[in-house]
Image (tube, rainbow, N blue to C red):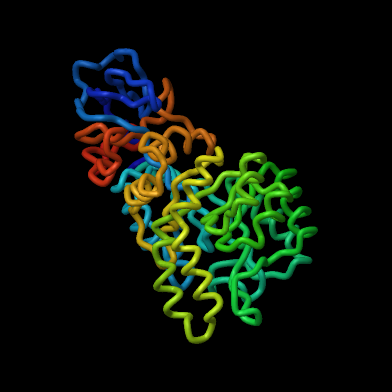
Length: 366
């Protein structure tokens, strides 16, 4: 799509969900931007109807990543288009070895907030995904990825230790503190992959901003997260794969397999306990690698299944998620990035699985 092709004037008729409790009767999109004032040229506007949400957010997604590592631009484009068709118009790319900056020039592809490339301990992550380094290099690599990313850095906080036969923390406390401080100095926030329990306290006390997966939260660490305002992105559609992973590793790593099954069994209780304690919870699918793109509706439904009220689960992929990432919602002058549905998604989040119309930068997507 040409960057110079003028966006049409759109008239959006229906119920516009500006916020959880704020509903307006329609809006306009002019020059790719939202307005609530009738514009010149309104008589020739293209009219769309339905229930309107801000473009959905997938806060843990990997464009440019496949199950064996980086993928080519054509595959990355297909990933992004799949997410767009599901209504995901804003992605926090939580680690990718591919350079996807070219996406920024495409007005028909979701907007991406990048966390650079994963930073992992040597031989302690999936091959070809991450920078694999030792603790003495952590600060330098965090600084590098903070400069390369869009305000985020992604650490691998724990992974299986083959000698121990189970999940264990990857980084010493001192190096983590120094690395997070350096990221913050450079204006970046830090998140970390964590399945297990052991790494969480050190990461939070070191000043981390977010934890991915967070299946290892306990009665001891949940209050700490709440006190520090550390967010979690549970990726429940990914946690659903734990039993299969455990079965595959049973013979070689029985302790790890048993641990993964326990984390899976308690996943809903863990997420609900985090929510009840006031920990910010946001949606992420962990698409890329081994998981398909376009699963954001399933992730929202999983949050509801875990016991999070439907309106808050919806906010975790719309209003609150966008504010957390520093991006606008359906406000005057904001980019016209919105999704339309036949029914009120507040009444049943399963509506998200069937978007009626996707509008990105004021253009109706095919």
